[in-house]
Length: 166
Image 1 (tube, rainbow, N blue to C red):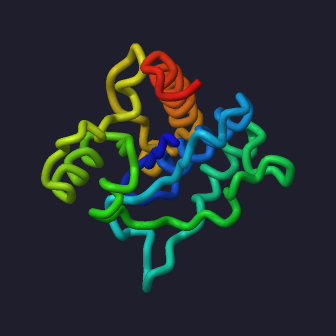
Image 2 (tube, rainbow, N blue to C red; image 1 turned 135 degrees about the vertical axis):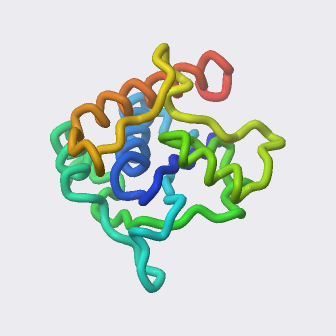
C-alpha cells in the first residue's frame, strides 16, 4: 500500500485538487487498491472549532470540469473538509507532497527532520521544477490544474519506475 498525503496552506484548493486527481488517476488505471491518498493543511486558516472548510468552489468546479466529483466519480469530493497536518502524519504516510516552498518549510518545522526522505514538492516529479501555482492569489485555476496534472502523472510514473506500484 502506497500512502500519499498532499499538503498545501489551507487544504481547500491545491492539495485537494491533487488528492482527488491522483485518486482518479489510480482508479482509472485499476490500481486504486494499492493506494491510500489524502490531503492536509499546514495552517488553520480554513479550520474553525475543529471543523474544516469544504473544497473551495472554483477548485471543485475545476475537478467537475474534468469529471471528478460527479455522481458516478465522486471519490469523496463532496465530503472533503480541510484538516490540519499533524506530527503523526509523518509515521502514517509514505510520501508527504507539498505544493510550494512555504509548505515544505512548515512541514520541516513540524516534523523536525525527514530521516526517511518522505518530504517532496509535487513538481519534483516533472521536467519543470518549481511550485504548484496558488489559485487563491492568482485566481488562475487552469494553471493550477495543469501543474497538478503534470505533477500527479509524473509522480505516478516515478512510483512505477521505482517499482512501488504495478
